[in-house]
Length: 523
Ligand code: MSP
Image (tube, protein in one colour):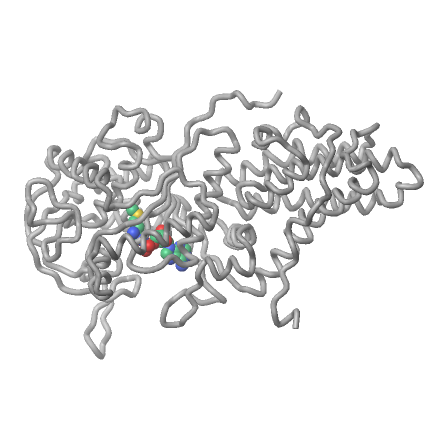
């Protein structure tokens, strides 16, 4: 029997929360889709899943941008945060919550973690003197910077300008956590993924950590430090806390907190790994809280081989791409084209070929061909299978037994491109089978055999469409609707012969993936 009733561990996954100083772009879309695919997969695979995304609204960068736009910070945040909420809706993201750091619940949680760390003796008052990058909202040591010889301007490692800052500040005793963090990376090699990022962090921490400035006095757009209103909390301490705010912190006894903390994955981009793999576990240790299981750092999306940048003018909006590729087309390309943890390139020409070959000519064509033949030649009803040949059995075995273990192995490790190849290979085998069996010829020669062949194909399409759901939820649902699969029989446990298609009447089939034609091609 299948394992629909088996109890599986709850699963908590988060994205980074996006700064609201600009509009969402393809990089943000990539991260939230990547996380959504994992969340959908875990739900379909029987886990109680909680998926959080949101916006990071405090700090100097947002305050300055609001001012430049002639707006009060909160009004400015309301406006841009809405664009991120809308992006999640448009991309069919299945998040359970959307957190904004300007919400009261988040102020409460951030002040509570501050007090906890303070009680533990890890916060002291001092003065900060050093370099700060507003774009990164990060402090840098002199040794990490590069200098433009002509202007004397200094830059952070990621290329952002730094400015000299001197102000009173509370500090977190990060230096006391160097050994504890190194022990964590050693005992839990899975804590930082992929491996290359883990090595990068270990060598950084091995050099020794300086105490961290965790409050600012030169502006007030932030969460007040408990007991000293002159200071607002450093935006990263505030932002990282979002991951526990959403599940009820400071109420550590709540059901939500007990069920979902520690998080399984914080999914983030490679540029913010230090904050997540060094500061966050240190803050949590100082607040006597359990540590997340894995920080997964994905790569960056480049466009036509170049880094996206306003000055190059190649910043792609998710909405523009959706016009050409449709929602599932965009989701598919991003998951298929970006290898695990590495940078990926978006090229329009390649993306069109990919969607056409994998989706339009793949599952789209297979479903349309098969269902049309069934509709025309089998009384508009998926036939029950007759006697199966070894070829029929081999294809069914591939779809119902062999696909899922391979898929899980890939999906569990964020190797969605590999997982998609696994599904694609079943579609290719079904294509080879349809050509070899030639059901259109059997129509006259052996109608009973034709029915069996079509029933085998419909069953394979059922399994493939169930498997595709995390990545292309809308289109997979359309295929499953055409096969009349009830909503409660679409999770991964149903990729099993216990749930094989029976004889069922269908409607006139409609194509699910039209071929994409570029305008210049069409002209
Ligand atoms: N606010 C911080 C994160 C705080 S998390 C407690 C931040 N915001 S951001 O808006 O700059 O970035 C949000 C996420 O988008 C980050 O994980 C970042 O790495 C990711 N990306 C930004 N540009 C990207 C690409 N071009 N490609 C892929 N992801 C990129 O950092």
